[in-house]
Length: 404
Image 1 (cartoon, rainbow, N blue to C red):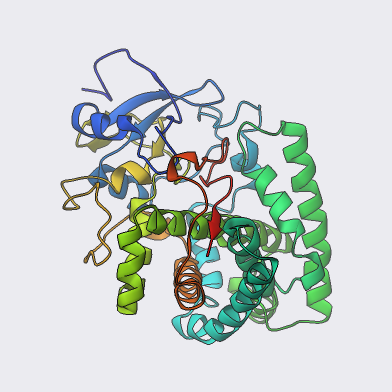
Image 2: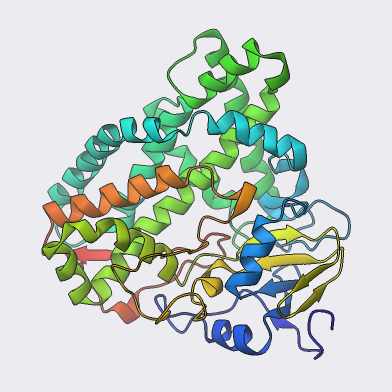
């Protein structure tokens, strides 16, 4: 059997019943058609994986990469270039990617992440002070969820504070598959490239205590670890997406999930040792993780639901995989002390999110502060009125109105 014997091609992404309810297709496909044919917003056909076993296998396989610029690869967006994930703007694959991870990974050490926590906390407190001063009700995402990761990624990249707000506009345009035209995407990418090309040149002349300066120092001192200025710009672009956009949306989604059932919030108020587990469970429980992680299959691959032939474009649904009942007991229930919790929200294998430890730190700090400072926090609208943000490769909520 190759992929699926029936001729049904499903339009993808699916629509959720509400912002905090999973698409019903996830459960049906995991059971009946775990390797399903789908039609992407571009009109191109791909294959969707929904079982945890299959998603993890593909994401961990070193042979399969984001080669979406390959001539026979499916395009995600309805534009010719495939949006942000077109081949020319992706960070290097194969050996080049391994070299890149080796270099960047030297910066994302456990010690450095621990050392950054006081700075992250102090900044988070500042944004929370601002939200509280403006008064209740407030949009938690706009006032707190988005500014915090913007500041953190700006600090990592050595960006002046005055320039950090432009990150949000660039990332929103480059990560949207339906709201903006290819001309707008290309324009944002050009602006980004120009800004960071100049920024890299400035840091080479006057290095600081940031990731780009660190990479420049390594590259200049080790012949076999050289990294080009263009690769540094792509690194900044990748970290903008991974380090800002994903965490920004996740802060709002996490708080909305916890406040949707008051018993969850009250349990955390009573036992702060659950914060770490709650963050992991929110990552797993997320029903709006976005389109999924794309992969291009370069050789025939046996999966639980059939054989994927070489040349297949695959979308790995982390959200569906994270609700797989064969891996997670009571998968559709939010369990605040679930352990172990082998979710795939950060990908897997050599392509797993290199900034996962930083994202976890930001989410934990954000949640701890909200519990400490705003124990009476609640949603300011009925949970049914929360709206998912449309068109994003990385899913989010339009706003998270809260009061206290």
